[in-house]
Image (tube, rainbow over all chains, first blue to last red; front, side, top):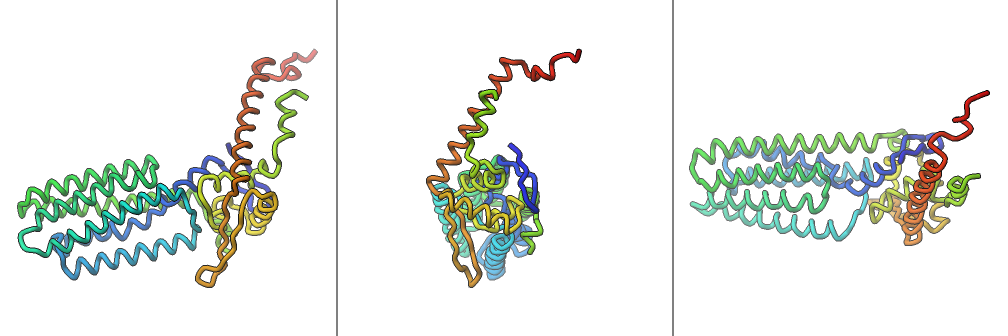
Amino acid sequence: MTNKTSGSGAVELSLARCRDVTRDLPSFLGLRLLPVGVWFLVAPALGRFEASRAHYGLAIAAAVAIVWIDRLYRRRFGTVVTDRVRLGRARGLVAGAAVAYLALFAASSLPGTEALVGALVAIVFGTAAVVVRPLAFGAPRRRLEAVALGVAFGGAAAVAAAGSPLAHRGAGVLLCLAMGVLLCLAGVAEHLALRAALPATEACDA
Amino acid sequence: MPEPFEQLGHLDRLVHEPARLAILTALSACRRAEFMYLLRLTGLTRGNLSTHLAKLEEGGLVRVDKRFVDRKPNTEVSLTRRGAAAVEAHWRRLEELRVAAREWSDERGSIPPSLAEEPS
């Protein structure tokens, strides 16, 4: 149903859009994916997935950037608190995946464990990507994105499990770059969708 | 006046006004939303949105919480139980109206008789 509001701020209002955008707002905040995408693009230049100052520095920079972008979104678009049960469950899974990832990242400093750690990291990330995001945000576009991430990480797991230096250096780097590009594109696409759904008005900019 | 159109007059005007219906529909899809979000979503001016929210609050349909976050004013709006019931009832009534209007149209044909008659 489409209606026209009265008053000086008259715009076309689709009630279905109001409901859908509000329910899925967290999944539209796409620029938060950019730091992770950039991390994947830069990571191959820093060497393999193993504990190093450069990797830790990059991870911290990405985390800070995500927090900063989140605050920017809050200021520009305001916030919406959606269903607590769904978000609560997703947050638990994200936290679990993050802890598992950090543990594996630290364990990778042990000699001779890189291949195993690489595979486990890929599996943890892939599982998180496939399970957590659709569970939390459920929009069809996000499900597709999650499947793409899952496939990419599944491939990374297979490459890492193979354990050959060639697999690590060649296919691993390609997968990292593909992941980075995919995340950056997905992030920008989500952001553009958000801009289209919530266009700036004079009242917002005042 | 035909039956379905008579029922139009019984719609709750507090809910049925387009901007307020948009606000209530958005709030029914979440637990609470910030004023800035509703401003962005509806495209209303700040004054208009404040007025609509005041009316909805007066009618007991929404709860408006004003507070300070990082020394800046922050307004959060949420639907009350009464508001949720009102939105639900409103959509149900609109659906009933749609069905009634379709039945009425089927009974009389899709073109109103006054328009269907050939001019003499």
